[in-house]
Length: 130
Image (tube, rainbow, N blue to C red; front, top):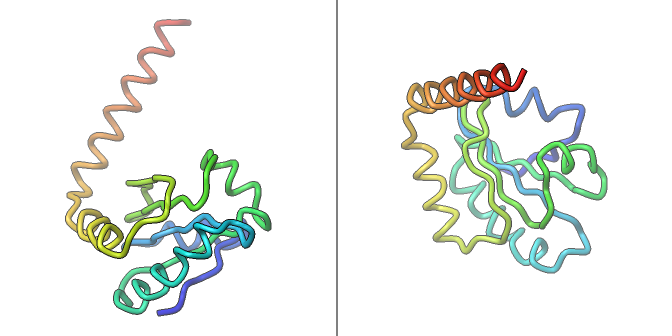
């Protein structure tokens, strides 16, 4: 499967679906981004069940800002509409494969429970502060 260009217009639609979406934040002037692109493309061909998206940070600065992208490339993994991983730096092919395996193995019910607990704790802290 070829990579998909993600924009502000299609980001939520693409990433809110069930399954895994990998997102590569990149720019054409970024040497490491350009070097990582073939690795990312090969992985997209190897894993047709995963959506591989690319966000050009120059064309989509609002998306880069939304996710606090400070360094590119940054790889983000979304599963079932939940961001489960985000890390700057180009990954070697073996590390990208390892990331895909770990994201696929996640117990998403457990992830949702952890998120709910974090939100509850945050809300309690905010309420205590007044």
